[in-house]
Length: 166
Image (cartoon, rainbow, N blue to C red):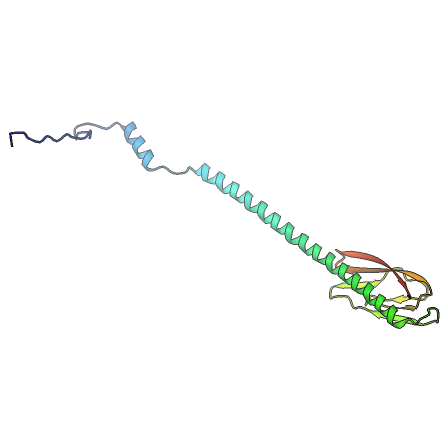
């Protein structure tokens, strides 16, 4: 092997006798200990808190609107059921031809938490909060106004119907 000796090159490492400046040491330490400051963490927590409050408020509004919509739907269904019971009762109780002095009675109990009644009671009719109506069989047409509401008063409805013996 012809007398060549391998050479090793040293990396640029400061020698033991070289001093590292305190500024260079601080920069190295700051890079190694990087993180968030207290102010950054507080701003993040405040922003997240505001976002959570906004989301919860939207959720609560949706829940309350859903409850009101449900009450409106029950009131509407109660009125329509009441009208159908009256229609059926007039058709089955009133004789043909009309005008014989007969009466009909229709009862359709309202669901729990709701009331239904005859709004303006025409002469000869009687109604109650149990959604029961008694009246004369009409000689011609008779308009009745039905009312229904939730017990808490949040939802109310009116329905006008016209009854007649065919």
